[in-house]
Image 1 (cartoon, rainbow, N blue to C red):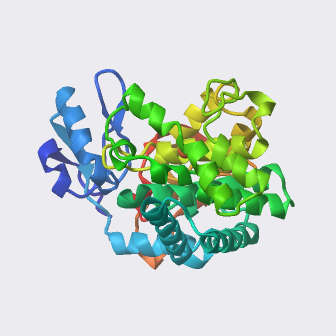
Image 2 (image 1 turned 180 degrees about the vertical axis):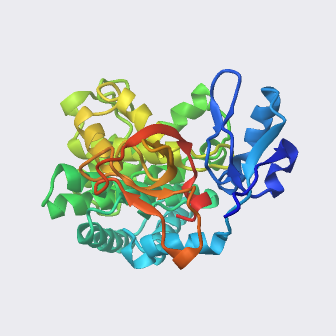
Length: 389
Ligand SMILES: [Fe+2]
């Protein structure tokens, strides 16, 4: 059988080239830009940045092995087998409904200054429905429920925080369905107060001035006021709205509380809030990988965050969250498609160097069953959306 030959592709041509990286591309200071064995198409969204980096490092060509006939459609089919919509944590339709509802509540606050009690009950119902989804399949990694759309950031963020807050609440207080439900509702409402912050401040693609930040810091108290006026009285829901920017070692806002003075509900929401903000794609920033966001949260555990909640988050994500590109002990390279579970270092991996069409069998390895193999190295992160996940 003929072995596909390597071709040297000028970096300017990478965008229109196909193939698998045949020689690792490393910058002068040792940073791996293109890991060996990874399909170049996976880097499409970040290619401009990568090409710039290569130029700065004096790299002008990349060696590619021509693709072994597996089309994007095939990849989608394979991924579809693993992540069908019904198996996802939250269906896409449900996610859209929730995002629309949060959107209309925000618009109402902007237009009338408050929300009507019936809007609260609609949000509560959606929160209960999301809670049922979370309870139905608590083992599915929460990141599959994440919605990413740049132009609806605040509403999408509210949805993501609700799902992640509920997920963490379920991990930390298993069986306490009431608490889980209140946390999901709290997550949906946590940034209500932002509806009264000027849009120029909310959407400013640059650091805020002191005055602007002072205005921004009012949103938890404003949110509590709006919620109470609309008839919300539950202490956990109010704690999420009012306390999600407090920090474990003090110095957060609005009240600068510390440690156990901060309600448990607010400590859980604080991690969900920061994790989603870091991994979100905004007009002015690329999303951070889940792994890097997790590293930041772990580094800040005990200072900004409650260590107990940070640990629950780590156990949920695994050390290699979906999208991580890893090398295995036998030299093969793959993309992690499901992290988490009890064993943090044994996720399910889709091999990137075995794209063969024979029989269409997906090339997945579940490291929990392949005990002779282990992950040797972390090579980087492929954006989940580039993978169609
Ligand atoms: Fe907030």
